[in-house]
Image 1: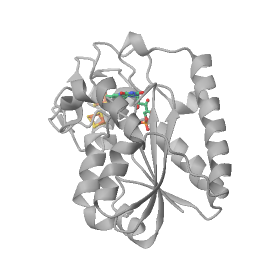
Image 2 (image 1 turned 135 degrees about the vertical axis):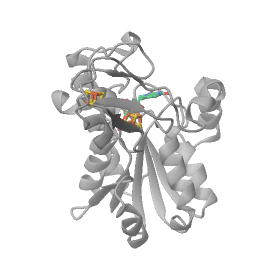
Image 3 (image 1 turned 90 degrees about the horizontal axis):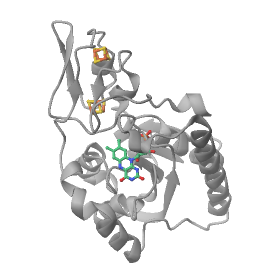
Image 4 (image 1 turned 90 degrees about the vertical axis):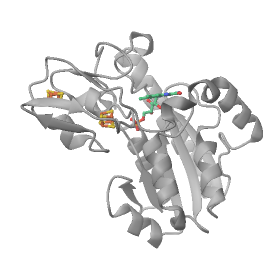
Length: 252
Ligand SMILES: Cc1cc2nc3c(=O)[nH]c(=O)nc-3n(C[C@H](O)[C@H](O)[C@H](O)COP(=O)(O)O)c2cc1C
Ligand code: SF4
Ligand code: SF4
């Protein structure tokens, strides 16, 4: 079993690792960002493919990976796993439809609710206990699903036509432009000290350091990794101020 994931702030990696480990003792997981991911996918026939939901859609970086490497998917057996803060409608279906187009066999779709990675919006703020409970529930759901899969009962989250309509009407029709391509919406304020961390960890190399200041480009995939890790809380995307950086390890 190979778990393949994209994860801005760790939620999806956590879920893909847990499910893969419960299904196969000799599991392996790999990030899409790792150049070896393509070779590893070529070598395996069954894959758990995980990503976070953004506006009820796949992050552009993930969509681009699937399309650019369309030759990889023929006859692969794939379980699509989407993590989300609240709701996506057909989050798993979004990748499943693409994979099917390229000849994959979709074994199942799985939606896991995890804490929201958007940490610069007061609307989405949850306290520590609430986040711990969300992760505990997610862990229980994954354990249950793993048992079912061992008995050849696959989850069907987000794969039905009704889910497709809910995903479209719930958000995607109105917000499709947000994930249609990369974004240039990164704001870096005067508190930046030019430490370079954001530039090192950005999956799309969207941040450069010039004269000891970070500068954002137009290739952001909205993953929130830099926002959650900047020691100066100097980076925002959707909001104007970092409320509380999201660190998964604090809640497990
Ligand atoms: C830009 C952006 C948009 C998001 N949109 C949604 C959404 O439409 N529905 C939802 O339930 N969660 C949404 N989320 C929350 C993430 O999907 C969720 O926190 C996910 O588990 C993050 O996974 P990661 O830590 O692997 O990046 C959004 C997060 C970001 C950063
Ligand atoms: S991580 Fe923060 S402080 Fe460091 S370079 Fe990036 S924006 Fe500046
Ligand atoms: S700039 Fe930040 S939010 Fe955008 S892709 Fe890079 S790390 Fe993710």
